[in-house]
Length: 225
Image (cartoon, rainbow, N blue to C red; front, side, top):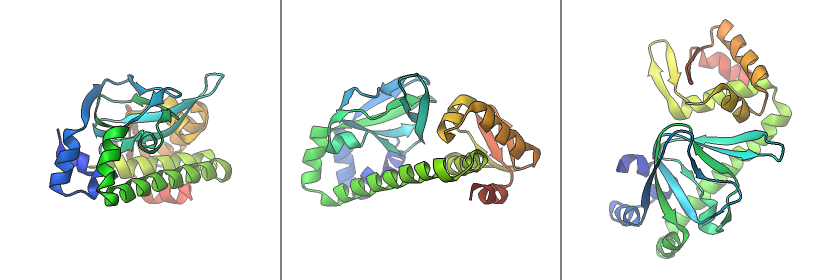
């Protein structure tokens, strides 16, 4: 297991090496292939997961079959953390968008661990608060920001988390289909594709297969405001 990737998770950042090793020993390892579900919305769950490699999308589906993506998570990020404090039905479906490795921690094991380590509980609450802030910001964007602005903002966010330096800019291997990127933005694929084509014609981005190279982040930042 890549201990460094695990250390990126808020759950582990407050631990010393001894405590981190003790917690890792109680966690289970799993692997899911691209397109495979880790858990499904509405199904009972009591396990938190930390991604040690790959990417997972969190989505919800409406009664008429439409899907909305809540987040794309990568190495070092957590999912299912609500189940540690309140085991119950999952609030979203978690699906791998790339081959993904994870470690899982059950509610009972975490409860015992937190009893003697309040600093870890504070880190967990901080992570939950950050997730809530992102959710509130996304809701505000749906109301106050047009689709091109949301597309620019999504590309910049993906770049901060998954971007790698390239010769002509920043390569963002997001592993999303065009439909998934549209779901993440909360708009139709046609409207999102139109915005991407506009950004491309202006020289701000270069589209790749399940990836994009950001050529002019300053212009994208202006458009995202």
